[in-house]
Length: 321
Image (cartoon, rainbow, N blue to C red; front, side):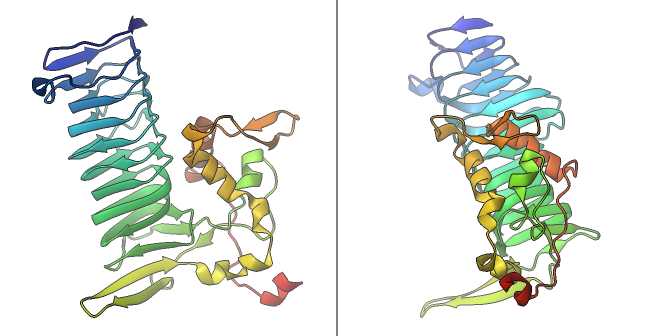
C-alpha cells in the first residue's frame, strides 16, 4: 500500500487506489470545494473527508474520520469487500449503496436528504427526508421526514409520516411510529425483538424460557394518539408491543443483556477497550467487536441464528410465581 503522508491536491478530482492517507482530505481554497474524490479500492484514510462527490468503485476501503459529500456519497453496485466508515457520514443530498456483495459498515450516524442502502450495518441512527433500506441492520433509529421503505431489515425503531414494509422487518425496541397507516406488502413478516435473549444467542447458549420474538400484526398493534395545543392538532400512529412488554417488570430481562449488546455496537468507536461477553463452550473469551456484532445480527436477520417465538398469551400469575 502506497503511503501519502501529506495530501496536497490542486486538481478538481482526486483518485485513490492502494493508498494510506495519513491526514484529512479537506479543501484548502474555494475552487477545491467542488472536488470529486474517487476511491478505487484498497485504501485507508485516517482523517476526515470533504468532497463535492465521493465515489467508491472498489472494496477494502476504510475512512476513519467524519465524511461529508455535498452532492452525493455513492458506492457502486459492483463493489465487493469491506467498506467502513468509522465516524459520522453526511451529505447535502444523498448517500447511496446498492452493492449486494459489499460488506458495508457505518460505525456512527448518517444524515442526508436521501439514504438508500443495501446490505448495510449502521451502528448509529439514520436521519433523512427519504430512506430506503434493504437487507440491512440499524442499531439506532430510522427517522424519515417524508417516507420510509423497509425490506428484509431490522432497525431499533422508526418514525416517518409514510412507511412501507415488505418481506421481513424487525424492531429492537418495543415501539415505532408513523402518521399514515403502515403499508405492509402481502406475506410481510413483522416482528419485535425487544424480549429476545440476544445475550444467550451471542454466546451460543440456550435461550431463556420467557424470551423470544413477538409477531406484530399491523392492525392489531396500532394505537392512535392525538397531540394537540391551542395552535395545532396532530395524529400519530404507534405500532407497539408495550402491553406484552408490560410483564418486563416482573421478570429479570437484564439477564438477556440486549441493551448491553446494542449499546456496545452503538458506542464501539468511543470505547477505550473491547469488552468481553463471557466465554464460549471451549472457555475462550467472547469479544464485543463491532464486526462480530454485525455478523451476529445478520445471522439473526437471515435466520441462521434462530430466535424462538414468544408465547403471546401472557398469564400475569405465571410471572408472579
